Amino acid sequence: MQLVYSLKKLTDLVQTEVTFFEEQKLKILEKYGEDKNGVLEVKKEHEQEADKEYHDLLNTETTVEFNKFYISLEEKIELSISDMTALEPFIGFK
Image (cartoon, rainbow, N blue to C red):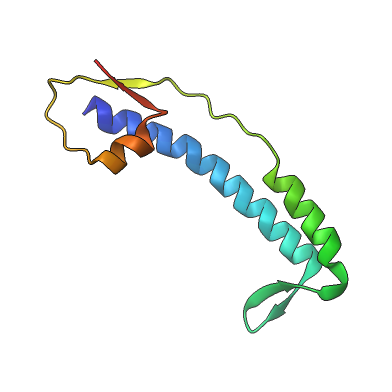
C-alpha cells in the first residue's frame, strides 16, 4: 500500500506542473489565436510572437521535489520492463 501512496503522491506533483504548462499554452493560443470551428489556431500575422512565447514556455525549467521510494525485491509486485524503465528515476530496489 505504501508503494501505491508514493506513486499517487508523485503523480499529483507531476500533474500540477502539467496543468500549469497546459494553462500557459492555452493563454498563448488565446492571445494570438482565433477560433476556427472550435479549434484555436494562431493567426498568421502573430506566428512569430506565439512561437517565441511557446518556445520560452518549453524551455522553462521546473523541478518537482520528491523523495525516491524503494521497492523491496521480496515484495510481490508485477512490473514490466517498460514500467521499470519509466519509473527508474523515481524508484529503487532493495
